[in-house]
Length: 337
Image 1 (tube, rainbow, N blue to C red):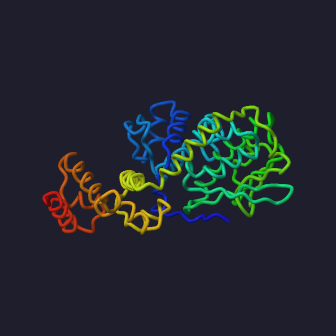
Image 2 (cartoon, helix red, strand yellow):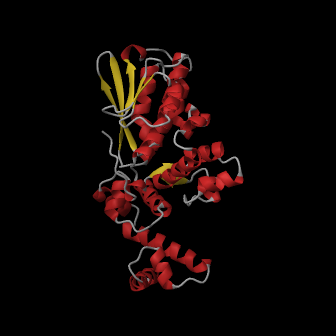
Image 3 (cartoon, helix red, strand yellow):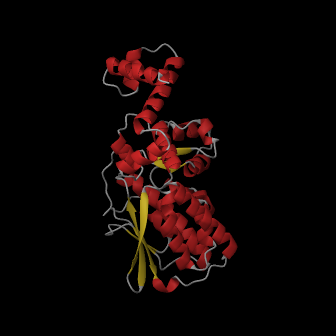
């Protein structure tokens, strides 16, 4: 059973900006709706236009909450762009150009966490069927993870449809939660068999379907897509990339008052590993945290007439005295040769 508890700290996991942009484009068709979808996410227009920008899982979940408030749960089924395998980047390309359905599912199992770092996929063979179990790596509320799963399952269905050339009637889409009010819409779009109150969340396919050849098989293109996925996955473990992930986590978190242990768990790293990799780049978590706090303090000071006590409160300090001590430390570190 997947976790249902919701904690803000664990929601601060880096996410791709791609889905955020697609959802905004699909539903933000008026200035009023666009503003409502962006409300509380703290995603800037500049970030939306930056192809290298990422967001946090916290921000993605805020967007989901906004869509739920506007349209009710199940809105994702009205956004065909989210179903398109091409929307999932190199993973979608690698899956579609695989030689057969089994190989496509192997790509998704191995590399899926690159696009959805809050989740891991595990293959479980049961003779006549194979189950691809989806497990959360962070605790999320049911409405949040169910929406994320619905989007994921729509993408999987599109891949299977493209390979089989027909709807995957034999597929079973499993949800480890109670049946929601929009279940009829889920069944209408996913087809196959949608099962709620299941023992796990995942996709079950007949083993006999896995050898089905893909009409889009392309060995050269597949090799290039796999090479790109390997590069991305490998880069996640490099010291410089870990530094970038920590910096991104701090900059995208609504509250920057993270401790090293929470940051490491959010990034899926052991604290010692994070510390070692940051040291390899000549820095530490404390230095990065101080840098982000210093920048936020400067922006608040420049924004207008705001007292040191107010800045301290917004930055999560217990009082103005603690903030003053931090400022002295920042200036001392700058003056140190």
